[in-house]
Image (cartoon, rainbow, N blue to C red):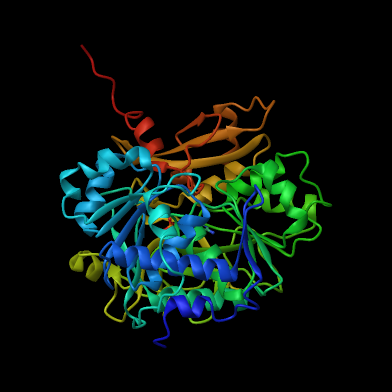
Length: 510
Ligand code: AMP
């Protein structure tokens, strides 16, 4: 572990201070010199607001170049960046403020009064604003500062960020990410995915989540490359900019939306060298359609907030659809039995556990929760179910909480979903467990049909009879226009479980 700060490591390979780092869709641009000067002004502004090393800066703002400077200024000042999903409500914010006790909160001007008057905000030294155009009280304060700032010395083990996990059950947990976690992972990704100063990445991911914040931003900074910094994914804008780009990092929905866009052709994608997908499973069908349309094999990788990027399909060699590739250099990954925690054989499904310099330090102020999610030998229990095949490719089959136990047997939703997805007329499906009086849980399928298909429930259930053991076969299948997803493209199985929760309950009589 080195004690060179994350900030300095990100800027270690600046090819030339005049090199462009960022361009917006409107043509606004920042060079590396602008970014470093801006981060210096931001760090000075934060210090003026009372920020000391280790203090938290909580941020709920739209994605703008100023938000990027706020992230960089925060780590440069030795403070801890705490980004919050722009969709969080005031009640949710109150919890994060109470839990993380930030010294400074930065929010949209419209939310300022409400946030500042929360009882949980009383210990906050200052509530500052930044709007969707990068203007607000923080931008004004920043404009009054000098560019020079001596980057605060931090140890590798000191925190750089706290990211609250989307936690679908119980309280949301703050994952503590250290300087070393982030710098180490960015270094690995630059090498593994061959990023250089010649790269131009289309950055259309949210800036509050690990994927857009760290994977996309840190990697390109460390490579000395540049980014098109877009507030959100819009297929038309992405297609327009693609001829000037070399790489895209996306969630699977980016790829399905591109495929649905007529103007997205082989010619448009010609100058691109790499399409990366993660944060949710990429359908094998999308992978196939994409390579038919463009000649590019999407590179799928796997990670999570707590462990950063952990596996990846190879840069050279077969990018195998439906898999997340191999453990990245520096990552130790094993699959263990769900109940006993002992390692299991190749091709058997179990829980994925991970160890390495990219694995987070623990959950903020939750020592017991942290202890229960690490094994005594330092492996983190991810809660993802998966297997390693005979060629060493890692497969993710779902979250352990999505595992269905029907009649005492384990049913892995992915296995059933893959069979349904392969049926004529099906776009995709989600398989959930719903409380059932006889079986504990009843396997239930929610299916999206292709336009024009009139596949019905009986046909779906019939088609699976020869393909799946009886206990894995769905008892019911429903059709929806689209599956509920969050901004990262993850299917919200909780929502589905709520919708179909009483399906198998006996009807009340009288
Ligand atoms: P987050 O912490 O929001 O990044 O979510 C991490 C979770 O997303 C992981 O624990 C996985 O369940 C899921 N995930 C990430 N990448 C993939 C992938 N390529 N395939 C399947 N699931 C994924």
